[in-house]
Length: 388
Image 1 (tube, rainbow, N blue to C red):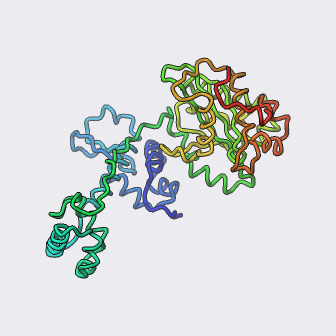
Image 2: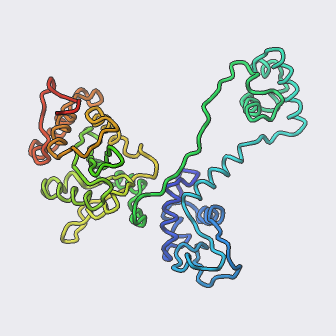
Image 3: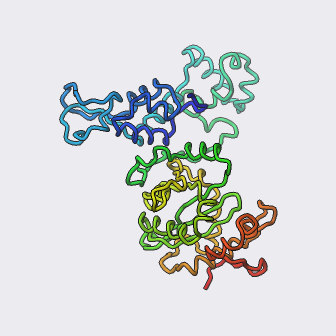
């Protein structure tokens, strides 16, 4: 039931927002889904939800979760409402954790003693480490790092620039969380990254396929849908309309139809995609035309490109050919086939000097490579520059 992680992540909070929008999800059911204690969910909804002002009248429609996300009248209701949004919940949690570490808990007398000793030592040109070692009374109060942090926060008379070997760090900027681009976040239930890890662990075949998109300029109408086989570092691409989920879905279904049931059922059993708007209908590839479940689809965690690191790593080779800032409206499928043929014929040190083409050919055969129009290029003739 329980899990090893101690804190709820932004992905967990996204799941909570999705589940509280459905009245069938009680606090106990949400806790069971996230594998945490019920009190964790209750505390999360109480601490990090937003209270919208209104008449302080008890609502008889309030669900057991205690928030109004599932109510159809929440946008026009004049009563006081409690709503849960994962973005603001994550920001509140981070702010609370930061405030708890923003000051020391030392006694006033100890703080005064530290201030005097460090100030006198710094005036004599002593380093903080020297002051700490030379004055054993400081060692009985706290550690050297605590004193250094107190100087940095301005709690002592000694300023941080007065310390020997003071390092000036770049200011840290607040991380901004953008909304998930999926039009229907409910499709994430059962398809999150943690569900993906469970599926890999339970599956006899631990292979999976990663999907992402590569864009050029903001004004472009075209984009590249990349399909990656992580273990072999093999990647090929399809032309799609930028940000269009229908175009992405059509391209993947056409690919699965082209390679036939033999390869689609063997290779494309577990599929992992980004949270971008172009993958809003990604889950629809799970079923065949007869309505039979053929494959599983999952989505990465929000703001975690490392969840599909193999895919992102292979995009580096695309940027060798098409640098950032160049429009992709000129690309054709023939161009992509030639580009990825060269990329997959490039020797990889991480694969014992084998090429991705050789690894896929040994695993699935040459027929599969011919069906997706990827050819073998002589290693001496591989070209990773813009192909004319």
